[in-house]
Amino acid sequence: MKELKEMLVSQLRDAYSAEKQAIQVMRKMMRKASEPKLREGIEAHIAQSEEQRDRVEEALGKLSARPGRKVCEAMRGLAEEAQHEAEEFGKGPILDLVIVAAQQRIEHYEIASYGTMAELSEAMGEMEVAKLLRAILDEEKAQDERLTFVTRDSILPAAMSEEEGDEE
Image 1 (cartoon, rainbow, N blue to C red):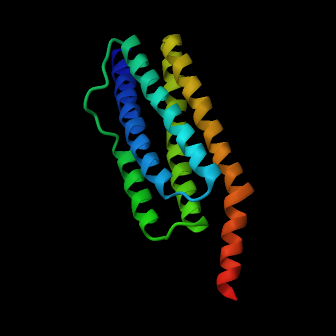
Image 2: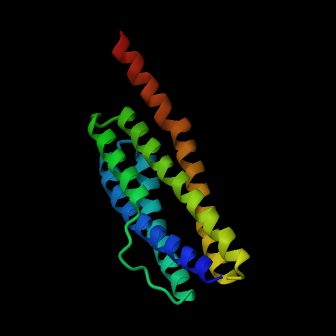
């Protein structure tokens, strides 16, 4: 059980770093987004991610651990990719699609991470930790759905219109 706890603590430290990096990326992407619903959604998700970061720290505390200095290399890569892709397009619906794609890649990474940690903590009998992680997991899934909705509802129609206008 000692190795499992060490692994869970390591994963939580990774998630703490990932949340911090995701917040930074979202702040940058929010400034580049042109669709108001996307900007509003990113702004709300920043606040939610700050709460999630705090809950990860709380989960670490329940395991008698602290965040430490671990850097989530996967999130670093996702953040760098998002930055590079965003630089390729000017402000508008195409850039908004790029932002959504980057955000959803981040969400899917977080969904996988929190799902695994929630299962592990529950199997270990760390029910308070599991409850915190399941709440974050549910929020990440809901955010992914919101991104899909705003894409279908607003961003894709605008991007398609822009493309049709360019062809004429």
